[in-house]
Length: 465
Image (cartoon, rainbow, N blue to C red; front, side):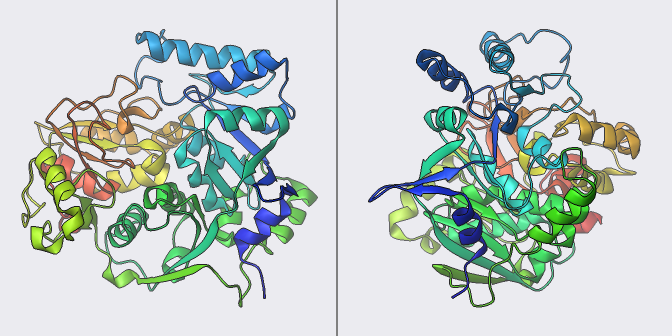
């Protein structure tokens, strides 16, 4: 029986199996940001330890960084302390640090892939749940807790129970205006936010193979929102073309050797998964969420479910979510007035996302009452936006480009949605207060976000394409 790709990568990194316990797993890359690393560094200090393999650890602030005036001190005292502390810790422990205004700074899950730091076959961890993003490279990538960050710093290993394996196949081709974000929201709407709990998910099928690398990063980013430990896609020619000539990717004969190995990173034809699920791409349309978790989503032309469509056990939470959002069962989402639009985050802050946004707003004007934040996922993305002239399209349409950071994905910096306001967001979570206390969030793709920004209401982007 051939192994799954997950088995191949996991087994290649096993240092030892603890009897009746977890696996000691070797970690190829640790990413550190400012929020979940301070206690880990303190733990090393308290034990008089150094980082075991500092060359495998990369640090950068992203959650607390403001998206304006980054050349000035951060005004928020908590955010400033966390960002400054990361800089000091990285220096003390001899770690690579891409600080604010560094040309390689940005959101850690955008910077890693775009620089070739995340490679096929790797094990990758970070003290952040959306580390699953890096699985798009054909890696086993997952989020860990602060005590585990310390463990990896000290030993370059981690103790983990091996998850079960799941393959989600999406057959066919995606339709007009349907993006990787819509695929992810569709999967969550069908499987719920706990449907993949305990599993590592491999995405497969023709619809997945046709995705660009940016799209694959978006899809894998959202694996955690189905409850999965992580998600990944087998590396192929799309992966290799994306990584070719990246700064930290192998070069010359090392590149040839690496690609030869990466081509072996596939599940066997007769590999057996613990669970298999199949979907048809033809069933997916542009998606929006209507509730307070990412699984409460629907096709943009559909109506919010009626109460009798919800299982009895979930009706109380369903009503609570709709009350918070100010929506009613059976309503349409199309036409609902929008106050804020956010395009960015580790989910949709890459160049392809801003190209998509520009394709809708070009030749149009931002709705007067809508406040819109366009936030690149990195300085590299910001530079590419300017090189391609997208910034001029945004400017002519009345939009302002901000500086890189996590921004309005979460209420840990200046970019907060005010209480009661409705935001159409390309980020990953729509929990109560996620974008600011009392904020109401509709998750969507960059195309849906752009359509809302120019019309002022939730709009099917296909009508503007």
